[in-house]
Every structure is written in C-alpha cells, then in structure tokens.
Length: 108
Image 1 (spheres, rainbow, N blue to C red):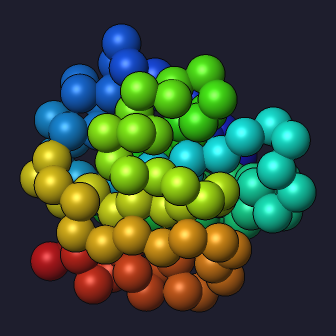
Image 2 (image 1 turned 90 degrees about the horizontal axis):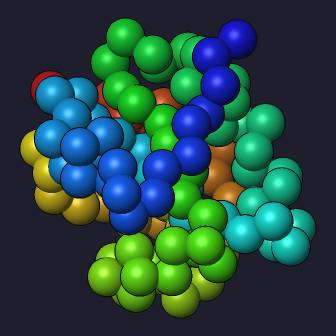
C-alpha cells in the first residue's frame, strides 16, 4: 500500500505546485479527531489513484505558514491542486467515492 507522504514549506512548491498530476493536499493536525478518521481513507485513495493523482498531508500545526497562505481555518481541509493552482477545497470529512469523483473531475 502506498503511504501518504507529509510535505512542509521546504518541499511544498516542488511536490505540490510543480506536480504534473493533480494533487490532493490534506491539512491536518494530530489532535484532530476527524483528521484521524480521514487518514485511512486518504491511504486507500492514494493507492487507488496513484497513476493519476498525488495525495499528500500538511501538518497545520507544524506548517502554520502554509495553512495561513491557503486560508485554512478548520481541520481537516482538503485542497485540490491542478497545475499549481487550487481548483477546489473542502472542509471536513469526505468519502472515498467523493474524493475519487473530485480527482476525476480535475484529471482531464
């Protein structure tokens, strides 16, 4: 199973903004209950969409500068990037099917 990698300010631009495929960025915190619920869903998503999208996590406590830059106020917040631009955002839990549908919508 592919693991969801954590990114931070030092590698965010290279991994997320310069990605050739859409990227799902999960802003989370270790103390956040819904974030912990979303974790296994994102792991499964990462495995299922590995050929067409990238799934990464940003610890909002450790990378508060990134959270502020992208106006993340609640956790979890999922940002969907395509060609280095946020094309969609969602606050709270999302089902695997909704995540996959959102990736499909931005993969073409």
